[in-house]
Length: 322
Image 1: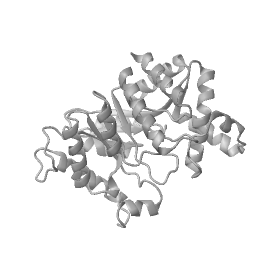
Image 2: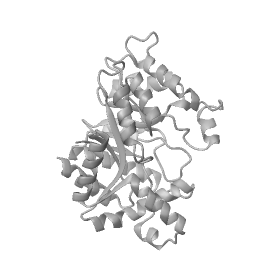
Image 3: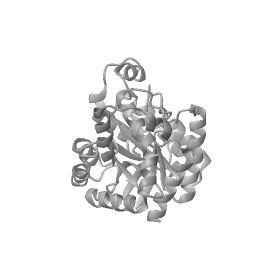
Image 4: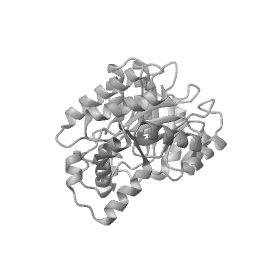
């Protein structure tokens, strides 16, 4: 089992953005020592409780503070940017940290229509241009491309498309790049997405398929301990979906909140996007999903309130598969 981290840099209440960033670097160093292979950063805008808005900068910061950990983006919002500019940033990172850069890109608008427009410098909605921009990005990264972005490093970073179903998987396969399925967003199409990617893969940018999945996991000392820790993540995710204050609440605050039946049902539904339990339960469920998806490479998200408990959850997960 290959394990990595996908970090949205969820900000706990009472903790500043600066402190959250410091903790992120500390966590990256901690998981590297545990044996995690990679550390990826999301890109979010106009979300009060998510600090990761520039994955390229965080990739550089973490790579500079670690020695072997691969760093990546999960993912750069390609429709909003120049594919050439994205390629130059990736090559610059590759020049700084050869062999440690992994580039994940996605189709998301990044926030509201106003935010999307600001990111795209006022251009009209470019989401439909994503496939062509992805093809352009590949051309700028290839050694044999007519126009190659600078600096011209010996090797290009590995490239992945992020997606939630068969369409994104087919596109990644046909273009011959890697694919990451977002189980933590949509837990319903993982098997089909991975099957589609394998069936549609053509040897182009990559010689062989490279597939991963991303999922929320909290591993406690026991099932009961994990359920207690997960309460803060449950409420945080509900608030993200409702557009409310998306800083992570403490367990005490989360327990004290009143929820309507519809909100309780939504939190139960969201648990399908997660694995919550003690070591035995976490290992069994992750192995079952790995078998179902035919995927043994996972990016783990853990957005609980307590930082030390968060570190221990990552430790327990690694110990299950060491």
